[in-house]
Length: 189
Image (cartoon, rainbow, N blue to C red; front, side):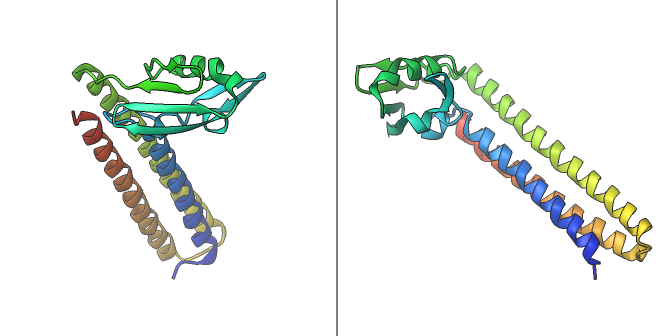
């Protein structure tokens, strides 16, 4: 039986590991694969009347075809700003503005570019793994300190460390799974 003070530490560690895995998932969704997905444009901010506004608040984004994204601004006066934001996003996209909607054709990815994207995805995954392992270390240190300060039985420390390790393995496995899926997605022609 794990004492309540230590269970709180474990719950906190689990929450932080969940955040790291969520961050990884969000970052991987921004990496372009072969097919058009609306999440590709999620991180783009548009300079709209002097403030940085997320693109999805200024326009509807759709992927009607596998190699095409369509952006339809709610306010036609924001078209140029949206176009500039997409071009300067670093995604290598060239939007075509026809006056009412913006079409973004997605070119085929070269082999070198696919390898670069996989490398970037692995870096994102490694950051998430490091964050999860740091959370494990911090939680274990906190458990040791709590056991010492509260004069709790040493067995509860070992039990808690085992529980924290299980959480670490679970979330690192989740990150690895996401990476594997993303790598397949990128490398599929």
